[in-house]
Image 1 (tube, rainbow, N blue to C red):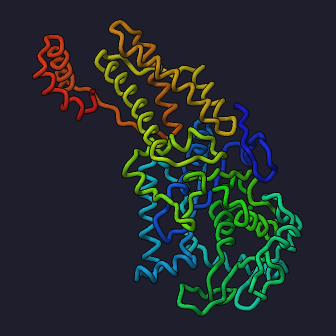
Image 2 (image 1 turned 90 degrees about the vertical axis):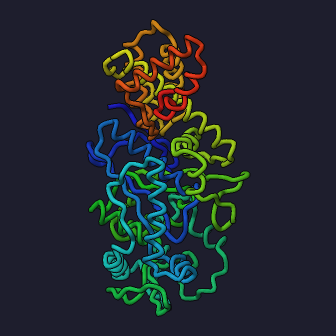
Image 3 (image 1 turned 180 degrees about the vertical axis):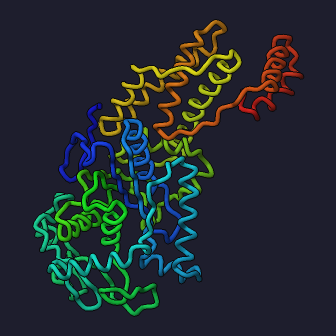
Length: 447
């Protein structure tokens, strides 16, 4: 099996990837807080971990990829009031909107898509354990985690507790023992959603939700890969690790992966800055293939700048790939050429590029080389059809690993006659007839 290297944020370096189970890979990445439509940047981790899943599946691993929905949150409570809905009605509406985008982006079905609301009892029991072992405490109307109880706190973000404390904002909450301590449970009587549990009536804090869902969905205290956007590294993922260390004596995951920011005019895209572009709106203007290529043509750890020009360019690239494949497919079907076989050397070069921390740029050089040869062979009347069939078989596999989805035409007797009539009309310079047939053939994807 080939050597796979991934950049581990925790150790701050490229590491050879070795799963806990030699046949299975467990992946968890943080999903959206479903209080509104998500912006385009939220889908960068989604596309990245979908690519990683596809690559690892192609390598023969049984991949269990999980991403959550945060459907318990103060933002949801506030937005539900504005929209005159219950928290559940609001979150279900925006989950559906999110999943519509997943479908358009051709994201593989996940092993599980848990909601925080489904694990409340487990979260409360987890927090009770932390209270019992002295790493959590009640302060006023909340239960907090004591960061000073974790000697490793700051290891993920490479920060020291003393530096973090000195740089912290003045906190009006005097119930904390340390300004860095974070809420695990909110004991509240407000009009937001609340639950009766072993730690009292209230609702969980965000940082606890993911830890508990990881432990319960995978039924493990340590998984292979945990990730998300770069902005989650601190404090969210740092706080997840702290709780896992306190409760399970593990860092929750062996590899931590983080995706670079999506920028607009050089500034991080976010709702709070008012510069976010909604994913659903972008997907009305551009294909899912184009958006996948937009994210993947820049290395996942580097920032990528959103412009309509960049996405237009990716639409053209996706169309180039699709048209080349369609033309070759039609040519092979018209000549009754059987399906080809994978070109091993090209496949290995492509997979070795992805094995190097998902280096899509190098992988695309294989695709571009094959597209050029496919176009050349498709244009020749005496082209090597066996070679063309092998190229089509190979590039179809490569596209699938990138998550690109193309609808190829199927040639039957009707389509053969239409193409024959069209080509004959062109040869006879019967432009009226060819103009009449062209839109029909285009509608069928034959031109």
